[in-house]
Length: 515
Image (cartoon, rainbow, N blue to C red; front, side):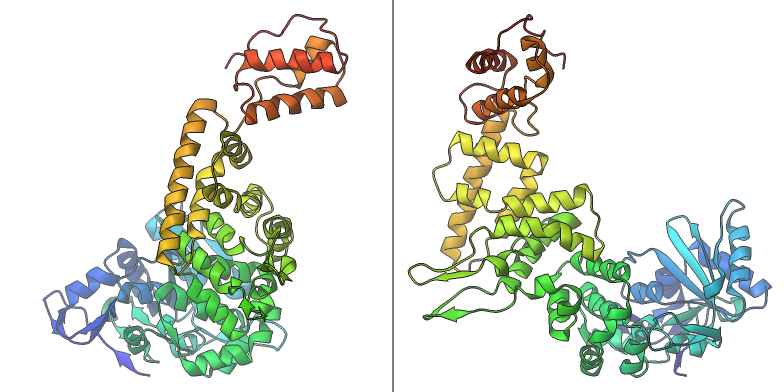
């Protein structure tokens, strides 16, 4: 096993070859141990863990993502620390928790030989060093006790197999058996062993390879990527819940298009997200072609990601044109069209969310609304904007109007700078008009100044068709600017519409509502 050993000393012992942030990073040749400890092992948790494992005479290492991100000088977003123990990880977890605080609850997963607890902002997991074997139709391993070397071999990628000793006598010793530091330096995702075995055993690792490439801005080593392509069909044994977790992590990267392009090139996209894969391609007829809606959607996603970390707004960007394959039509006189794709796309959202195991609640409704409405502001930006059109958009978008406009601005992907500048300027006008109408008419999250109870009370009728007709007439009159969004005007129109329907006022007009 290749080892890099950095011995602890209270003096400023100088040693070489500590890798920190590649570019991100560069290999620093002369670094003092106190600097290295400051980077990785200066947290109170490591001192406490060192005391526990040393007192128990058990060897232990911090391993995986925490070490990787520490060497990259990158914030560790998952906030987890993995500890591998040459022995009983569950027992060490109990003793560590007891030392850190009497009220810490240890969660034990005996089937996997692991235990974890929460400490401050970290989720700390303990596992006995082990080796794993798999059967063909399951990604759940058969586990048996092993050495640290066995444990590092079972890791998904070289950059996640890095380990640091936390025992008192070897505190800070750094073990890198598969050249993970070189891969960090070269920005490479590579498996420690034969990638065909790695991915066939646990196909979720294919998604993780692509996710890490997108998160870290790394490349997937060619042999490793060829293996992902060869084993893509194995993704079928992975639960949808695990797949969507990785997709969400990809969509939340700073440049998510990279991850989706790798998913497409590997053959995984058509298996896990066929609706998105169907957007690919350019069809030509009579010398006319349409844009590639897959790459356009990814460009819109990247555009929105530069402005917002709202995951559901990002999902709306990714799915905004999802209805185009079902609405594509060629008309010789006009060329290619996708009329109604926003409506069809909106109808597709519930089925997509259901199949992908995304939430079927207000978040789904939010995405559907934005997909449904994403052409409306674009249309307003290209014509003379009427107050009525603005009111209707405010009414339908409600509190999501700002996100909708942001999505529409992200949808400007023209390579013609003059065209792009014109659209952006038009959207500024739309934003100003929205602000003016909202200040004047308070249409956002519109609540009618006269409700069904007012109508029923005034005319002494039961709930029914007439109530709906009057309510709709009041709403449309306000949206069209015929009457102001005020109770007195609405009550007057209510009486007028009631007379048209043959209704007679039999009770005094209701008192003004208390806000």
